[in-house]
Image (tube, rainbow, N blue to C red):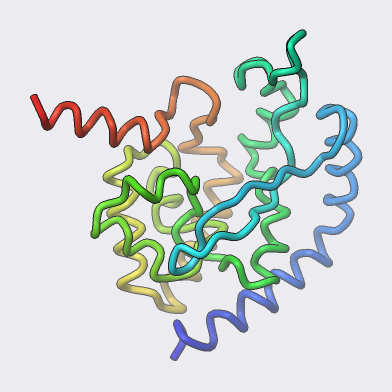
Amino acid sequence: MYKKCFKRCLDFVLSLLALIILSPIFLVLMLLGAIFMRGNPFFTQKRPGKKGEIFKLVKFRSMDNRKDKNGKFLPDTIRLNKYGKFLRSTSLDELPELFNILKGDMSIVGPRPLAVEYLQYYNEFEKQRHDVRPGLTGLAQINGRNALNWPERFRYDVRYVNNVSLKLDLEIIFKTVWKVVKRSDVAICGTTQIIDFDKYRIEEMKRNKR
């Protein structure tokens, strides 16, 4: 009952309240983002949602728009400035995803939405993460966040899918708040700390062929 009906109602109400309460912070981050990111403070990217359906995820931009003399974007490590690192380390870049939750693309709790290009590399077990709406936070996020390796993250994702409940969602929300306050278990994408899943799976397949 909770998974099919009440969870979506709770997502709508809580995301709407959060957007209203956090509106002053949104305005400040929009202004700072326009300054430090040299333009549009928002970043949108296609991500797979429930049943693999594609939607546009909205975040605060954490990399600026600097380009080389040929008009190509500079490497991520250069474009990820101090302000962008601050947004990511505090998870403030994720706040606009509340609009995705309000719309119904996402849920407050669920497996994090990953890149579209990863879809072709999932095995049958990993595909189960798309049986529910992706979330702003999830079971993997309170058990290591990006510090986890890919197999561990997917095991937590699928465990959540198979055990969705109000009690579990509330536990994940409270523990997420604590993790964000402590800024624990955070690895910054765009550095060498995290390998993209498609590269990880390709390397894994090469090792298995040896």
